[in-house]
Length: 493
Image 1 (tube, rainbow, N blue to C red):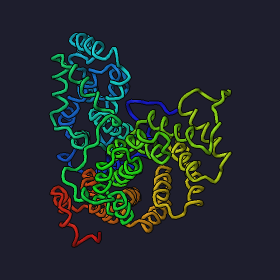
Image 2 (cartoon, one colour):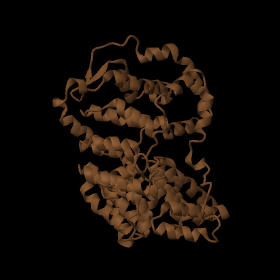
Image 3 (cartoon, helix red, strand yellow):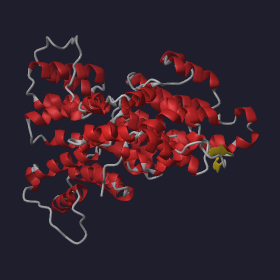
Image 4 (cartoon, one colour):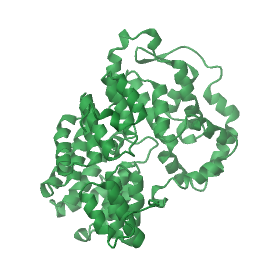
C-alpha cells in the first residue's frame, strides 16, 4: 500500500522528480560516483571537512530531536553520531571513530527535552494528523529528505559532501542558513503555537490563488479563448495571464480554472496548479479532467492521500464506469491505494482502450514501483492518442525511473517534436542525458528549460553539477550569476 511517510518512497519521489521538476539534482548520485573514482588522487587538503559537516548537521539534528516522529528513526541516529563525532568518512565509507560523546543525545534529551516534548504533545493533541502532514510538506522536511538521500549514498560507499548538500537543500527549501537554528530556538522558548499556525497554511488546497496585479488581457471580451490560443502556441506566461483574466471575469468558469491549472503544471508550478484545479472542482465536482489533473499534481507534490482521493473521484464520478464497486477479497489490504487500484483495474476490463484509464493506471503503477506495467499502460494510452505530448513525457519519465534512460530519450524527443516549447519536457530530457553522462547535452536542455521558464530557479543547481562534471569551472561561476545570455554563445538553446 502507498502510505504517507516522512521520507517519500524512492519510486514515488523519483517519479515526481521527473514529472514535476525535481527538488534535488537527479544526477547528483552519478556525480558523486565519478568524483569517488578520483578520490585516491585527491590531496589531503581537499578531503571532506568533517568539522564543517558536523556544524552543518547540528541544526538539523536539533530540529529532528524536537519531533517525536523522527527522534527514534535510524536516520536520526546516524545524523546524531556524525554530529557528535562518533562517525566519520574516510575513503568514501562511513567509519566509527571510537570517540565517545561527552553526553549522548538521548541523555541530553532526557535531561533538557521533557518540557519541549510536552509542549509538542500539547500543541498537537487535537490535530496531530494535520501537523504531521504539514511537517512532511514543509521546508524542514525537504531538508530532511535531502540529507536522508545523502546518508543512503554514504552508506553505499559513495563520497558525499554533507555540508554542500545541506546548504543547497536549505536554499531550495527557501530557508536561510540559520533558519533551522532559529526554529530550534523558537521551540525551546515554547513558541509551538506559532509553528502550529504556520502549518495550517501548508495545505496546498487551502491556499488562495494570487493572480498578477496588472493583466493586459483584462479588457478583452473573451480572454479564455485567447488563453487557449496562447497555450497551444506554447506561450505559457501569456496564457496564464489570459486564463487569470477569464476567471477574474467569471470566478465560476470551471474550464478556465482547469486550463489555468494545466498551464501552471506545464510551467513546473504544481502548487499553483493545485490551487486552480481545486477551484475548478469546486465549481464542477464532476469535472473529470480537473480531477485527473489534481491526482497527477498531488503525486508530483508527494501528497499521496489527496492524489488517491482525486483519482478515486475520477473513476467514481465517471459516467462510463457507474456501478463499479470495491469488493473485499483475500488479497486486498483495505487501503485507499488498494481501493483505487481495484476500481481502475475493473475500469480497464470494462474499457481496455480508454486512454484516460490507462493514464491513471500508469500513474498508480509508478507509485507502486511496477515500472514495466506503467510503461505498458502509457503505451496503450498512446495507441489511442499518439499526438499527446504529455503522455510521451510520462512514458519517458517512467522509462527513466525504471533505469532505462536511453530508451526514455526517444519518448522525450517525440514530446518535444509535438510541443517544442514544452519546458517540463526539456527539463526531463536534460535529466536523462545527465544520467547517461551526456553532460554537455544535458546542460543545453536545462538552459532551454530555463529560457522557457526563468522562474524554475532550481534548474541552476543541475547546471552547476553538469559543469562540474565537465570540469568547466568558468561556467560554474557564470551559473552563479544566473544570466542565460552568458551561455548563448556556447550552447544552442
